[in-house]
Amino acid sequence: MPAAISLCLSSLEPWRAFVPSAVTPSPKVDCKMCASHHPLVIAEIAAHICDMLEGDKQSLFRLACCNKALSETALDSLWMKLDSMKPFMPLIPSVLSNVNDIDLSARDILQIPCPSAEEWETFDKYARRVKELRSADPRGAWVDGMRVVYGRLAAVRARGGSDLFPNLQYLVCFLAEPGLGQEKLLPSTLRSLTLFSWVTPSNDVDDFAVVLSQMARHTPSLEHLTLENSMSFHQEQTLHPIPFTRLRTLDLTRLTQSSQDFTQLCHVLSDTPVTQLSVHIRNRGLDDDWNPTQPAFPALQSLTFCGDPLLATKFLERLATTTLREFIIEHEDVLIRVEAYECLLKLLHSKFRASLTSLYLNLGRGPISVQSSEFLFRTLKAVLPIVEEGLEELRYSLCACVPSLPEPLQEALKPSAWPTLKVFEFTTQSKRLSDRLLQESMEMYTLKMTMNWLSSF
Image (tube, rainbow, N blue to C red):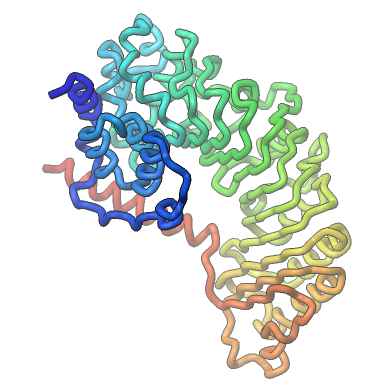
């Protein structure tokens, strides 16, 4: 067997446990490529073949093993997107073989002598190919300690002056353990980050302000940020705005914070050019005196708000932007009060009538304070001034028995009743954040029960 192929097979060995056993049907050939009169070099042919095999890891694995001319391109495609750190575990230096041991602290890991560049050589050969990485599945990472692997390895590599994945653009990972926050854990190439917290606020954790400061310093190209679970600030600190100069999308729908922490977060992000924000604020999530010291989200154009309309009104009042183009509200499973929605729609009209083009009221199936016919009539009446100012898209979801409504109201729920709108949709069923969280909670419970059952044998 040629030496190159032998090396390829040995370095691909970690993949044998992660490729599917069933053969995936071959994709259709791109006829446009076949009809082209442009002669293709081997590298271009390899790129086309690997593009057609994207996601078919078994075929890419076989291609990398059996064809020397295509092996490098196939390896790039095979390692480009990873759903776990597990394929890299056999490639890390032997001195770090227990990096996923949750009985060890991060400080214990940092006391291990740094492996030499030669010991990282095989790991680096494949790490540079990774563009997208989900370092651990948050639903099951508590089982095998994979939640700590990325942060620990990244800290060890940072001490040697290198990035763990130097070309990484998309990352899902857990918040680093205490003691690692001062290390450079993220590459400067990163554009999208989803960060989970796996500790409780009572644990010894690095201050969230330090985490954000390090993130802004080390990831100048970051455009999309999602924060999940519980993250808190040390309240005795005086915080200053943190410049995420390219941040455009911020998702906080699964972030659990107190009113004070949320105020701090708005303050430190006040200079960011975020245009798309998704936020979940629970009942009593904002104090009556909530008032950010800096204008919040001055460039915001799209807001998805999950929570009570009274809190949505309070949040909108304190936004710095006056050019909001899209607003979506997903109601919580609490009483749906018609007065609260009339107040919300009145504010949308008074503050954003010149810019708002899309509105979605996703109310679900919660109890309503009045008859559904009265609720629909009063909210549609409150929407009408916004429509007259130039609203283009209106979507409305409410659990109601449409055939039992008065006939004029049934007609008002048809697109023909709104001729100036480009889009009008009324539905009686939809999924909201609370529905998705409930489904995920049930899946997590089933997973834990299964693991407990298996461990009993």
